[in-house]
Amino acid sequence: MPKPPMVLFVTSEMFPFSKSGGLGDVMGALPLALHKMGVPVAVVTPFYGRLSTRDFPLRLVTEHCPVNYPWPGVQAEIYQADYHGLPVYFVARAEYFDRRMYYNTHNGDYFDNCERFIFFCRAVVQWAEMLERPVAVAAANDWQTALVPAYIHYLRQEKPFWAETKTTMTIHNLAFQGRFAFRLFHHTGLPWDAWHMDRAEFFGDLNLLKAGISLADAVTTVSPSYAREILGPRFGYGMEGILTKRQAHLHGILNGADYQVWDPMRDKYITATYSAEDLEGKKLCKRAMIRELFMSDLLEDKPILGFIGRLRRQKGIDLLIEILPQLMKREIGVVILGEGNLRTEAKLMDYMEIYQGRLSVQVGYTEDLAHIIQAGSDIFLMPSRYEPCGLTQMYALRYGTPPVATAVGGLMDTIAPYPSPAATGFVFPRPEPDLFLRTIETALSVWEDKKAWAAMVKRAMTQTFTWEGAASEYLELFRSLGAEI
Image: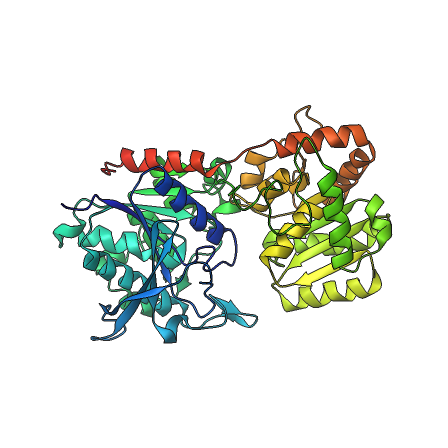
């Protein structure tokens, strides 16, 4: 009996196996949500050197997946893990993926990123054909996988296997596009028909994400607000032209939060569980965080502000650094978790020396500490210059840590701003330090009003952004394209 057609997600990272940001979280949750709805799903991702396989052991499926790139005869190994009943395939080639980091080091991007992900996308197409299972939808995510819908667009004309396959291209962050020198276009294997201003060509360069946007059957982004924002020059990063042309095929679907992982009522990383009805556990989590991070015990009765994210301009860390001296004049604590720019890391470490006991900076990222900070902080900071969706604000809401955030992208779709009676957090209109500081001060004044703060915390904790809802929207989209699933 032939196997039913499947949805094949193609991604450069997937939690819990690999993760550098929100993409990993999304790919760990969305395919699984569809799988639980009865949709046949599989995922393909690279076999990195930093791959976490403790809970889901891998097995070698084949050593001979013919990629024939960068020269004839080159092959990939394919491994497989069973992720709660969902097959996850890993493309292995040591010289491309056995590295300490996924995409870059502190010195910049890997010089061969284009070749690495050309290899990966070619391997995905070859492996799908070897599976001999119909692909109803190939769902690509960000520039690293954007060649997959481009390849399938042309393969439909040559191979019956791909004739009925629909493709989607999801933009998780338009700022990262996979832009490379023209000479690398020849490496992609795409026909000359693809070298066009409405396809892969971008001001004389090769743009992998643009190839995917222009040739996929549908383009999605991770929030409705971001889908509107990227049609203009402020957030379009030069791609607003092609996105406007494809506007009829552009869909904004809000990400969900994985409440199996991010819920203070069941969190395995925190000292005590708690709920909107009983917040006593949050006080215990705050006390435990203070002691774990060697902060002053006096902060138990003072507000603590938390920041978790890449230490880069997009996340507004420079705005936080600029106002830190003014914040430290108040009786508050600040906790920062992230990594990124070395100069930024050094500046923050200098400040931690100055404000010992009240400022804690943890360079790097660990899943347990992210949970500890969400539960232990009183207010969460997200001064992003752009935020396609954002997941950490959803986590902050569930953990009763009202966010202070810029009014951009998915932050607008998920935070009800003070002073609305339904407020769950605080927003400011532009990423400017004085507006950011002023909004934090407003949040601190509300924090002083214990009754008003408790009401806001309870409203925040009862907000729900499920992956089941997002998965239903994706399924509706896939079917609207004609996919038989």
